[in-house]
Amino acid sequence: MNTSVSMNLRSKNFTITREVIFIVVLVFALVAFEIFNFSTTEYALTDLLGDLQFLGFSWATILSLAFCGIDFAGLAKLFSNGNTEKEIDNWYLFGSWLIAAVMNAMLTWWGISIAIINHDNTGNPFVSQGVLLTFVPILVAVIVWLTRVMIIGAFSTSESLILVKKR
Image (cartoon, rainbow, N blue to C red; front, side, top):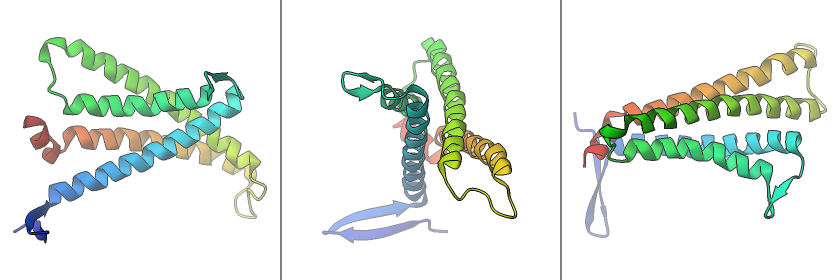
């Protein structure tokens, strides 16, 4: 079964394979996820830290960028030619990623909780505001954490990306 589509763009052959489509969709999902991750983290940290600043940048923005950056650092490590002599570096990176992911999940919970409280029409005859405040933030935080694990896992175990790493 042929899994590629060939196109002629300005007299040059361009082949789109299933792997290329998979990588594009995965990168799009990661970017969208990180945008959501950044905004919920910044919202929660702004609520917790207020308007504290360093060199004109809010602490919330700086820390939110750090949380998003650790995901990209892990991905960059996946695509680098890993040095097997320094496996401890991989464990340090994994540990920092795991700590950041857990902390980020807690901040997502906080941000969603604050957003629900600040939303006037929260709750209805079927679901009370108390139930929404209890379960929705936890559900969103767990889903965000699992999504992070799955997206990074998809990058690290993807057969097509392994081919990219060997070049």
